[in-house]
Length: 91
Image 1 (cartoon, rainbow, N blue to C red):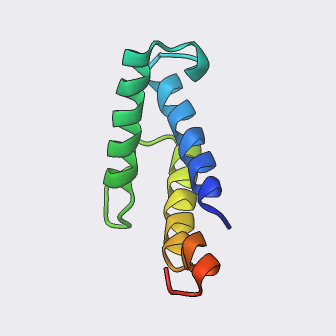
Image 2 (cartoon, one colour):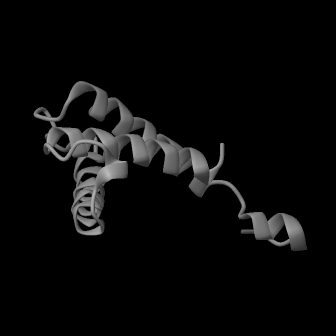
């Protein structure tokens, strides 16, 4: 598992949010619209990451991706940083 796995899942979440908000394809967005999607993605991840959070209105696929994102983040948080491998110190 790498941080890029987390980034990939986050991008999938952003794609779904863009579609739900009617923005369409992420690649076609202006920088301003992409910033809106990034803010909404961050808010959604933070707001729906807690098991106690009420995300019942969230799309089923999006809920699954949010759960996967948080699982990968937790796994990543427990790994030493790449720098730790280079110099032998803990992350």
